[in-house]
Image 1 (tube, rainbow, N blue to C red):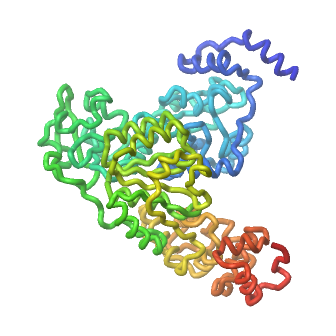
Image 2 (cartoon, one colour; image 1 turned 120 degrees about the vertical axis):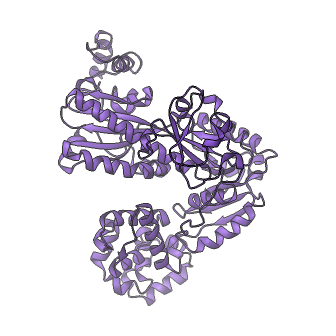
Image 3 (cartoon, one colour; image 1 turned 180 degrees about the vertical axis):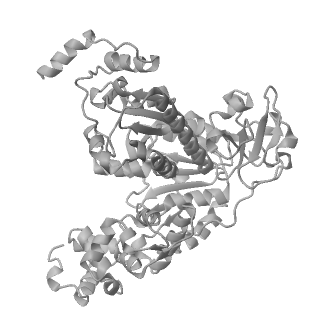
Length: 584
């Protein structure tokens, strides 16, 4: 307490060091005058709990998946120079990072951990926190850090934006030893280009149903970091664009939405022909190319071509659900997809939206009201846009009211994603009754992975999908590895399976072996003869019992069988009778 009193008394007497860049000086002033921090008393970074971190990682799954290949590429390139690469969310939470194990202890001492929070009002001037406020690439070098414990590192960071200037996160390269000013400039350029590549990937995912156009000032389309992107609907109107597209087209950002591209540039040039010269008014040498395979001119007003070779759903049981839901969605009946976490609700919803409309938007109830309001405004000018609702029970009452107004009288595909543990009733979920009436249509419950009658087919489909996303041929998988997968009870369902096989593909050569699987799965193979045990239900029942700490009632409910049936299976299996719990 005395130390804090001393700090508060001495804050007005502290002076900002001379020679700081203007942006860094402004951050220091905020730390002293607004945040009331002191370099000597800045605390160690707060870290999210395990549960909070898992929830955050789930919410940021699309950002993480888009950024991981670029982060891995950067780390392979920079690791010999004692650099770490990391990704933070728009709230300053460290989502993932890559670092040489030799330097891991140094990072931990400075508070760099998964789930650590680096907001400026908590940690003072630092790369991530200051970038979130400045919203532009920057570098914080050595003693420019407000926290003196960070004075030995240099951070070069760049923001990652999504639609309409909304900040998605921050990419960070940290040099763990002193570097000169030229090296700082090079790192700043590298991290900025990498952030633009991640933005381009997010843009393509967000606008998968549209015709995508790339703009280049020099005709070089090889590097996404140097391109501007524009998304067009089937009438050739601009529905989305990257932040630098208005500069490329010499137009104000508010002039572009719902404007036909051929009103800005010459119509004859919009044919998807690579390196076709385009001459907008006031622009010198600008080139354009179609990013997808649509080659029809905008003036033809043809709907965008969709791929007929979309990968099969991981679980064959979802195919039937998909066909039924698709028929109902095309008749404008609201759909509700329910199921445990990781069963593929969001994946199925996105695929339905692409097939029904092509133009779709996802609205997350847990998002900030400003973001929700911006998306609702976008919906008002896109009457045929399919709407996917996630975490709807977390939406604030004012935003529920606005959503009802947007849905009023609109005939648009509507898909709601919710956990099976939640019941969308007003008194339970806190939703407006008139909103619930608009959401209630046909309900589909997605089955858990543990109940599939064809586990091997699911494993092989998932392996092929992850290999396709990794840009390689699907590897073989050994019998031992398949046995380990069969024995696991998969509490995280398809999401857990995708992550496990994604890791395996990254580590495996031509064949996935047990050694390539996550540790939690390997532990089972070290204590059991999985090849023999996988021929029966014993392994899955035992791991499910362990997961539920011996609670028979919870285990039976989890496995979808009665308690009596579970007891009968236990008594007829190879499990010792002593291992059967005596209590409920």
